[in-house]
Length: 167
Image 1: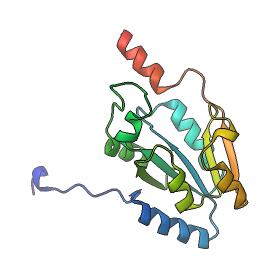
Image 2: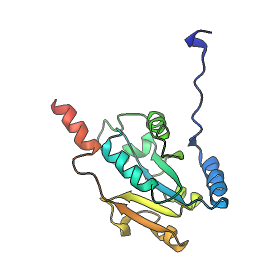
Image 3: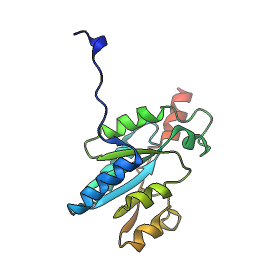
Image 4: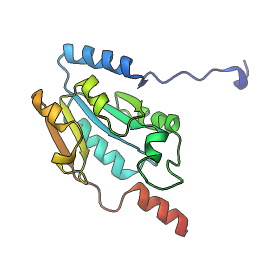
């Protein structure tokens, strides 16, 4: 068999909304605490990795809501963003051992996803004060917790893009 005839396996951790909802229900029945975070994760860097490690440590399962290409463009991060397409970004995240599921969402906020998953823990980066974190009220109303994690100084995708531009 030549390399050209091999079919790459699909990643079992990149899920649609219905599949991630089912999986979260199974985990919850087993007593697992589900942690949810979301973002663009355009160029994965040390800041992202440390953030995801800290988020994962807050529970048993880490679910990432990944902004679709269209939703990233609507966030005014710049005309060239995202640099990597949504499937590429999802595959990189899903390859991390600490990530249990990645679901791509197209809305401007992850509110519908948070409502569907019902995480026990909701996490965002330290640039988000708790009162501005979308879905915080829902998670707290269910007895969950909300965390705004400290950012790693000197690491941001925007900073990396600028550094690359300047050479």
